[in-house]
Every structure is written in structure tokens, then in C-alpha cells.
Length: 297
Image 1: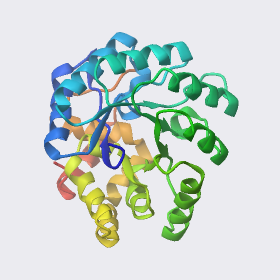
Image 2: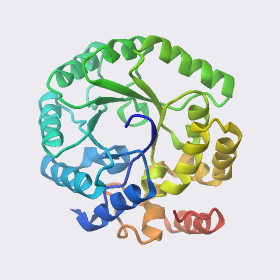
Image 3: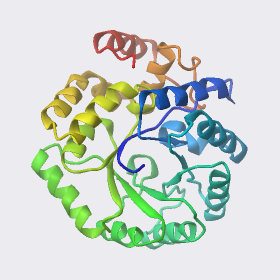
């Protein structure tokens, strides 16, 4: 479950209401495509914008639609007690694992973050993925904190941020982290434009925004890297460079939502307000990329 492609689907809303049927269809597509695992309520799933009841319904829908494909569930919240309540909901719904980012309003210290993971891990019966996403949480894990948290019970994977673009430097970075954490803890890459670099450098899993909407494209990169075909994995990623540039300019969430809306997978205006989708010019560019890059699978 903590190797290969882990796909992060959108959580579509319309008029501020969760679109359960559209979401179930997204998850069913991922199962049919053969992704290795699915994460409901990751950052792409807008977990921070949903209340507990909405998150419980999303989780239950994902687990049911995924069939036998493992589903991890994002449990991040501002207070530890709320994280623990969401953890209980995820476990009761049949989640195969949970994903935790250190959300905050006040700036967190490393001791705060370690304490969060320590408190949550103590009540877990499923694996825990450490979610290092400084772009949204504004908290950067140190290597020492990776090492401390990785010794906690049930910690099974660490989702690291984007790596250096130079392959040798990327491999060195992955090897450094590997030397600090137990062997059973996998290292996962995030930041889709860097996925091929990370997988080729030794990351065992890609936690993918793209894979949640266009699983075939993400699987092509993942399977090539897993087979040791670094050239194909790199070439497939380079082919998508115009898409990565859109991600950098507008954010992966907005661009992915625009793709899903253009393909009719989710309703228009599917993001939680106050987040607005792309403007007309950017949407036209997305529509052109769908055709030019064959972004339909």
C-alpha cells in the first residue's frame, strides 16, 4: 500500500454541497485504472475546508467505491482532539491508513509537531503517513524530526516535498532520509513535476495530484520507474511539462479541478469557496492542453 502510485482525488462540491455521486465515480475510475492506493481528503481533496460530518461521508464513500483498493484518509485539523476524532471516524469507516499534516494557525515548534504525531499514533490501529507539505502548512520538517517521528508506532511512510532537479542530488537527498528512518518506513515523493525524479532517485511511492484525476498518465510514469526504466519515466514526465508549468503558475488544485470539470468528471465550480477556479483565459489553456497532451485518462 505504501509503494507505487497513491492517487489523490478531488472532493467535488457544487453550491457548497459535497457531490457524492461524482466523487464515487472518481474513486471508481482510480480502482479500475489499477492505482496502488487512494488518499481521500488529502490537500487535493480539500480536507481543511470540510467539517467532520462531511469528511465522514467522503471517507465512507471512498472506501465503498474503492472496493479492494486501499484507501488512506487525511485527518489533519487544528486541534489534536479533533485529529483524534477524525482518526476514529476513518478507522470506523474501514480506512486502510491515515495521512496527517501538522495544520496550524499559530506557528508550530518541532516539539509541538512531534507531540501531535505521538498523541495520534498512540490511538491508531492502522498505518500512519507523515505528510510534509510546507506549501500548505508552512511548517518544514527537519531531518531530525523525520527520524524522531519515524520511530513512533504505526508510522509507515513519509511524504516528502519536491526534490532537487539534478538526479544525483535527488538520489543523495533520498539516501540521506533513508539513512535516518527505519527500513519499514517508505519514502514518498510529492509535487507532481518532480515525481519521475523522485521515483528514479529511490522513492518508493508517488503521492499524486495528477493520479487522482488522470490515473493512466501517472501510472505510466510510476510503472516505468518501478521497472528501472528511468529514461521512459523521465520522458513521460517531460512530455507533460506544459501541464507542470500550469501547476506552477496557478496551483495544482485549481488546474486539476479545471481538467476534471472540462472532462465532465465533476460539476463546474467544484472547489470550496473562497477558492475560485481558473479564469476564462487559463481554462482555455487547460482545454487546449487536454487535447494537445491527450489528458483524458
